Structure formats: structure tokens, C-alpha cells
Image (cartoon, rainbow, N blue to C red; front, side, top):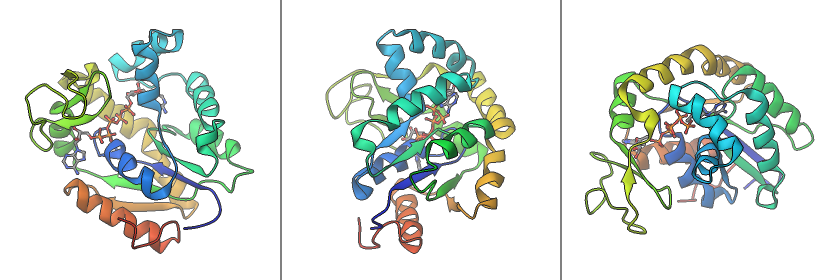
Length: 227
Ligand code: AP5
């Protein structure tokens, strides 16, 4: 593994598997996943001011204002577990956030790679409408692709599984629209910097992970024998 810090930016539409893949990579790279969506949901669960503010935007499928999001990421990055880098899932989400992240990382070696998970819109809709999340530990399931052993119950801690409010059909459509309008320009942004890595995400999670590992190894960001 590279001795310098590693910062990965997962790009891809909602439901493309950014959370699934970045969680699978954490231990292999020894750096944490930072999911801005999870951070907002954590704040909402704890009824903080930030959580209540974010809820308005999340329920509508809109982006939470940049100022709030960037400040939250800065605080998260300053924690000790990010000493060797981080895997970003859901951040940056527009050009303004991407520039802010470049500034945050300017003394840290910058972004290492931006894997883009390519998944068809029809598959995105199937994945999001079938997603279920554990209310207590946050583990993610899918009614068809990754069902729990007992319907509606988390395999890990027995918690109740629920459907995210923004995984309802009308909100999914709007999130996709917001993705294509505001987030997809980041594909060009990272391509121009030579940091984009396109990954076919229309495959089972383990196959996507294997492709990612191979790509990271080719860029000297991970040993190819890591599993
Ligand atoms: P966020 O939580 O980041 O949602 P998202 O980006 O829309 O991504 P998702 O979590 O929906 O999908 P994913 O790509 O992680 O897929 P997953 O692995 O879960 O953001 C929510 C909201 O917060 C935003 O709309 C916005 O309001 C706000 N927000 C967040 N970040 C922000 C920012 N930076 N700025 C402003 N606002 C922000 O997989 C989905 C499902 O598919 C699961 O059920 C999974 O089991 C299944 N699955 C995964 N991979 C596969 C596979 N290969 N095959 C079959 N099934 C699969």
C-alpha cells in the first residue's frame, strides 16, 4: 500500500452501490468511509439542529446547503481515524463542494482516485425501492438482492428494518434528476485531473469490489492480493 494518505471519492447515481462498496473497502485500506448521507441521518436520529435542517432537503431529494455540508465534512476529517485518509461516499456532490474538498486536502496530497460506479437508471430504481436499513445499527439490506434471514429484522442486532423516506418512487426520480444536473459534472472534473476510474456497477457486489481492488492496485493504492 502507498505510504502517503489515500482519499477516494465514490461517484455514481443514488443506489449505484457507493455505500456498499466503500464499506467493503474500509478494512482493506485501513481508512474510514465518510458518508455525508449517514452523517445527516445520524444527526436526524439524535434530533440535532443539523439533522432537523437536513431532513427538509433530504425528504425532498434536494441537496443540503453546501455551507452546512462542507463544515460537517471538515469536522469529520479532523478526527484521528482519518490520519491516513478517507473514503468519501456522497461527497462532493457538486463543483463547489469538489473545490472545497481540494482546498481541505491541499496539504494532504489531494484526491487519490474517483471511482465512478456506472449503473443503469432502471437498476437504480430497483435497488433503491427494495433497500431496507436497520434502525439501530444502520446495516443495509435489499428485499431481493440481500434479504435478511427474517423478514423485517436485522441479522446483526435484531433491529427493525425500515425504508428510507427518500427511497419512495417520486423522491427517487427527483434524486436522479438532481444527480444528473448537479453531481454528474464532477465526472468531467475528475477526468480532467486524470483521477476518474469507471467501474461497471451492474454486477453483483463482490464482482464490483473485485474490479475496484484491481483498479486500486493498478494505481498503487492497494496490494492486489488484498481480499
Ligand atoms: P445519500 O445517503 O448519500 O444517498 P445517495 O447518494 O442518493 O446514495 P444512496 O445511499 O441512496 O445509494 P448508494 O449509492 O450508497 O447505494 P447503496 O450501497 O446503499 O444522500 C441522501 C441525501 O442526503 C441526499 O439526497 C441529500 O439530500 C443529502 N446529502 C448527502 N450528501 C450530500 C452532500 N454532499 N451535499 C448535499 N446534500 C447531501 O445500495 C443501494 C441498494 O442496492 C442497497 O439495498 C444495496 O443492498 C443494493 N446493492 C448495492 N450494490 C448492489 C449490487 N451490486 N447488486 C445488487 N444490489 C446492490
